[in-house]
Image 1 (cartoon, rainbow, N blue to C red):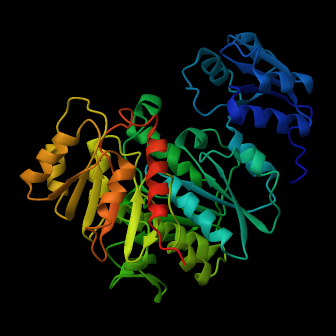
Image 2 (cartoon, rainbow, N blue to C red):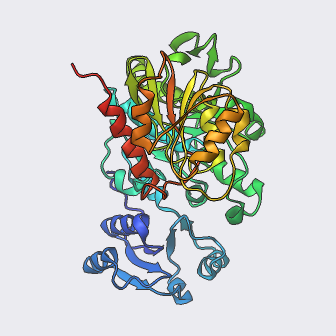
Image 3 (tube, rainbow, N blue to C red):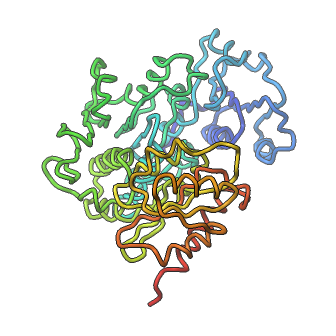
Length: 449
């Protein structure tokens, strides 16, 4: 951790407790700041609030009194708190500096930062880069919007590490000096307009990830959205990724992932399915290469990385059959996405809570489905759907029974996909429980040696 003195004896108001506010307040106290923590809800019984008070930090809950701004503090704001809260509006009126805790992570981090943002894919890219580092001699730690508070993790890294940080648009609005050595923008689509109000505001928040970069830094962007940055005054070395054509960066050619003419791996060897994940993979591979991760470690990661739990999660291979847990697909849109991710024949496990809807909108995505195995309250609806499309349909009691029943009908190179298109509550307490049952059932059918 760097010895940062810029906040010593400064008045700092942390607005919003939660995990990030708690860690930010502790760090600010360690840096010698005069800290007050404020939260709009009653936090008198909160264990984190009590911990901060025991450290000598003032904690005020239940309201946002405007008097907290009387000593013109620097503000560290929870990223989820909108700028329309009267206390924040008053701070803006007074031209007070308003930061988010990721700024603190930059100020104290000895490690160079890989910053990952975008509308879709940022969690997968961040996790994948972290996995590549784990398999490499180069060390790095994952942090940020992925669930590990950046300002806490930044205290644990050294100059020989990398700090790999997922960044939301909310967090990026609150930066000042923040500068990742490698910045990634996966893509930018319309999102969070209830917070940002306009698409331009949202895009500009995302693009702040590179505003402080210099010619010694790197920016990785989606080639097919290059128009978003082409008019910008970029200082960083800019590389693109593309699944469709050769670019200055990383791309797919003849089925291979290619960087500077070097073939890294064929896409058929990847365990993360779908074109969307191929883009995520390209961005992650390029960042890892720029950070010095070996090709060997990258290939090992790409052939084993399971992805995000219960979201098209690769759980393993039995003989020639890859199994994927997409239990989080509790609606038809998510299942459309999953079915569209595979070119191989699919054994599709589906069904669950009956909310009164039918499933005809899945028909255009069923071309590669060879077998349907149905269960739960919607079983009869899926039987009807499968028969209408000429699919072989098997009825099962639950997820575990479904895995048992496919063992006699599975063929070489079939993909087994649990993507229920329904909530789990008819048979399981949560989608996580349903996914875990699927994983355990898969394991029981692995050959013993």
